[in-house]
Amino acid sequence: MSPQHRLDLKIPPLVLVMITAVLMFIAAQNLPDLSLNSSLRLLIFVLLLGLSLLIMAAAAASFRQAKTTLDPRYPEKSQQLVQSGVFAYSRNPIYVAMLLALIAWGILLDNGFSLALCPLFIFYMNRFQIQIEEAHLADKFGPSFTSYCNTVRRWI
Image (cartoon, rainbow, N blue to C red; front, top):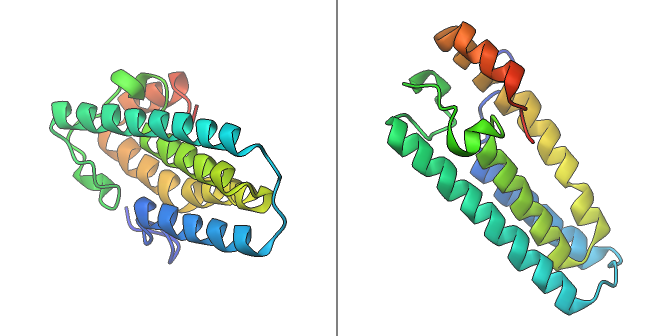
């Protein structure tokens, strides 16, 4: 299966997270803040970021155990369909973790517009990354992947 749009699989998810984080920072420097309590902001940031890192580590461990690729740029290199661990709750736990990290960053920045960029991250990931990955996985794993999609949500 070849990409259908010039942006399909072009921006690696980690790079997209960094671009989004920079845009969030720029927004926070130029737009009014939310005036949230700084201690509360820091607590929420630490909790969300910690959860994000735990999810990422658990997902990476599942990929390592299955001896399959973790690189989202090449979904055709997948050797096994991972459905256990955090993948029993989300088909894309690493992307959920990335989103949690962005939300944590937006809360730390105390800026509503920064947080409003998070749905754009979801849109981009759904359209230009996840749909393409899922098409490759459906081609490779057939009914097993279809069954997995019917029982486990794309995000959460």
